[in-house]
Length: 376
Image (tube, rainbow, N blue to C red; front, top):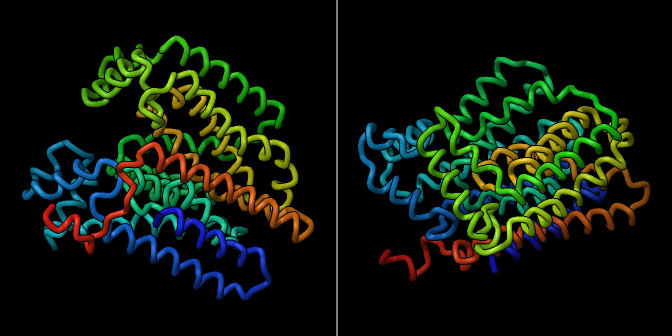
């Protein structure tokens, strides 16, 4: 199928980062893949999660008031209104939305000045997010928060705050990224970090077992739509239905354990090689802190409710930037190949899990050129 074939092609291209080939060749290949992702996102049809919701919003809204009536965040509604003022084609909107979502992330690979291995990062990004071929509102919000990373590095708080504010106009959950600025410069001992991770995992397991997030639905002043979502997830969890984005009927504690395993695969190497990576790569500690905070947030809240798990996703992207670093601290070529294949295998597992959770939404991939959608 298309998604897995594209992963294989990216996997092959990733070996260019391990070679001595001219950097210009790698950059050309990188941008060819980025453009391909944008094209696939622009021509898709009936492919991706929440397809009907987004399509109907664009299709049946006409005026500024209809686009900004509160069904979605103001920024997303305004962007939709602007595009429809130019063209009533939903494919045009998808193309523009994909260019922003994918393009900003592609640019982010260059923000971290030591990151010359663009193709490996692109492979991991594809595995984590299907390369934003099927982006949703949070995909663009995530891109904007990632763009703000340069202001975290430069310690420029005003541009950082403006970026996060802009991201909240696309998806309200991005406000959680405000914490990134102060925690970026924290320098805790590795043992302390390990202790925090263990405590958060144990606490998360207790909260998950007790279904303790029901108290969130009672918070005064919580937006009605958010409260409705929390109450719905609370009911689902009490019925044994997974609320973490996994399969439809999974014990919540089982889902928690699976989530822990997925995180440990990344966290353990980060903790073990933290000192070596910090000495070799400038700004690694920023990546490290953001990934650790994302893990703590996920362990304590995001493991048992999807609406809160989205908050952790703003920090997961930094794994895309951090994982390639393990390849280039290896001393021999064969060590690099082994580590690269291991990372690629993990990325493929992430890709397969994302697609398998929502198989009907992604498989098969339909485009505007397929006969099956012409009468849709």
